[in-house]
Length: 130
Image (cartoon, rainbow, N blue to C red; front, side, top):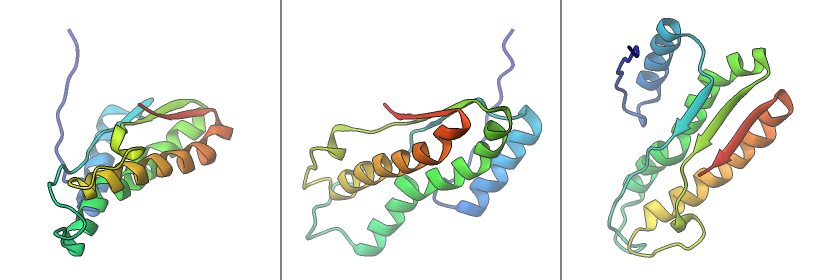
């Protein structure tokens, strides 16, 4: 059989996310593949989106990727291999006004993934968006 475990964390709560990741890594061993897929779907345009809500969405959509990569990448760097995949979306390249937060978040996470790629690729870690 397959050994499966489930863990939960609020990606926007960085301390909780870090603690959960440390628990996972301690119990399951180093990650060889990371898939970052969270995003906030919020129907609000640029005139109705509350700036504080927007910043909270960016914690989930973009900044959480930093927390996760910083937790799993050191072990990948040690062995010189690994894969980081980040889900994108058409709104990264074709923003949609009624989904302002999602559109900006997908564009930002795409750029964050590219920055992560430039950092980790020399260590043999593949990074891409899907």
